[in-house]
Amino acid sequence: MQDKAIHEELELGVNIDHIATLRQARGTAYPDILEAAFLVEEAGAHAITIHLREDRRHIQDQDVYDIRKQINVRMNLELAATDEMVGIACDVNPEDACIVPEKREELTTEGGLDIIGQFDRIQKCTKTLSEQGIRVSLFIEPDIEQIKRVNDVGAPVIELHTGTYANAQGDAQAREFDRIVEAAEFAHSLGIQVNAGHGLDYSNTTVIAKIPEIRELNIGHSIVSRAVFVGISRATRQMLQIMREARDLG
Ligand SMILES: CC(=O)[C@@H](O)[C@H](O)COP(=O)(O)O
Ligand SMILES: NCC(=O)COP(=O)(O)O
Image (cartoon, rainbow, N blue to C red; front, top):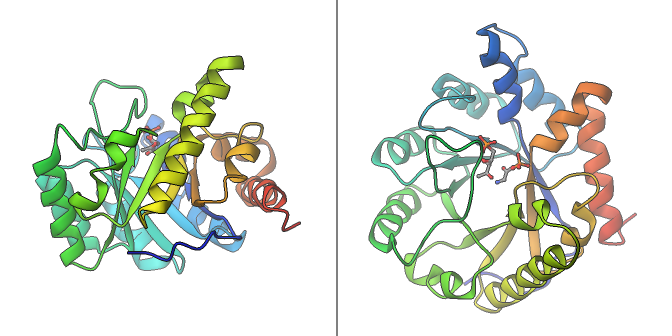
């Protein structure tokens, strides 16, 4: 069981997948993903997050090994619950692995894992990764029924999918926000570490960052997009500042 204390500091994992998207668009050697990882680390991020998709649309296998070798902060590797991906993760040995649902035809991750429907597979992947010493996180919807099964799966961490909140507006967004708060409180009461991410940007992160049970945010697309104009160091620092202000840490 993990410490049930409320965490003052909120950590940021910067997802640098879309640096690789730009590189893969032309098959060039630039932009250099390692340089991005170094700059993000130097700017104060707590982790580098990358998603090795089965279709290899952005991050490539070599990126995972290179980043693993070169960075000093935690690596959070996002992966589908397949034998191939679990094998790569065990070989790379990141500090964290986040199991995410994946559909080849999707534009981006569309929802959370169905822990109830895919219990055996997710439990098997979690066990293999955990035995290797990798801390496993499950990317799920803010759904109480899903959260009830997390401890049975054996994962110490969840990442609440904030995509629906991020894409909604008005009352619908307020309702989804309430679901996230309720899910975070419930998971925390069960001793599960609560992270959150997907679709968070410079205008919708503050309220999520104020939820005291949340320990880490993983944010990528908006930071890489802002980096086009201000550079990735500044874009990372600006997001960290939003998170610190939300926690009243200045
Ligand atoms: C699981 C998740 O939310 C991120 O990995 C996100 O999916 C970024 O990668 P894509 O934009 O390829 O979906
Ligand atoms: N798990 C969420 C993530 O890594 C980043 O998602 P996004 O900010 O690129 O939508």
